[in-house]
Image (tube, rainbow, N blue to C red; front, side, top):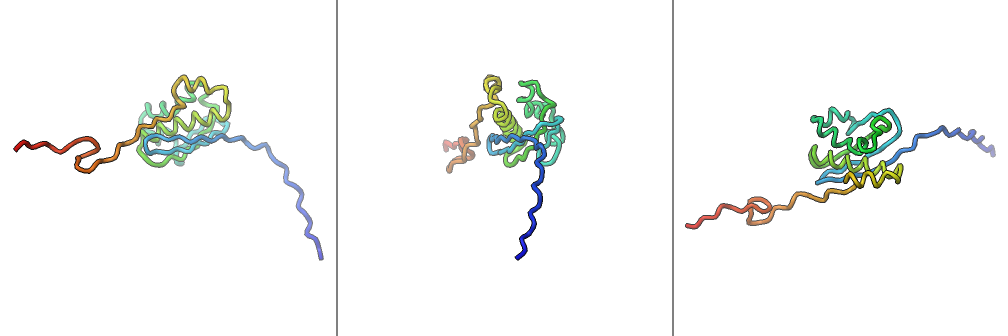
Length: 143
């Protein structure tokens, strides 16, 4: 029986460390991956500026970086699903903040003070029977 020759062990290259964070807002969920880089930001394969039409939405999504003054230090890759643009924007913001805390726990108080680590639990209230919407009633007729 011939024994197969073992291949030499591949040298491990210095792999980049990645940090993950999950954010939720309304019915939107965003899975965020942070890795050190040049500041490249993508959401579902598109650039932040293409995905968020408003400059304000782009600014809000990047708020955790603005608080820490390290805008161009991280590459951000996001998979966002569910909800609308506004919900996804809030979910991305929370996911980025959680990933940054995973990277460095010492920045948690600064992010907590800016209210970026709080999950906004407000969701749409369900519609009730006998009502037009969740709380709105049909018009009352006296006669």
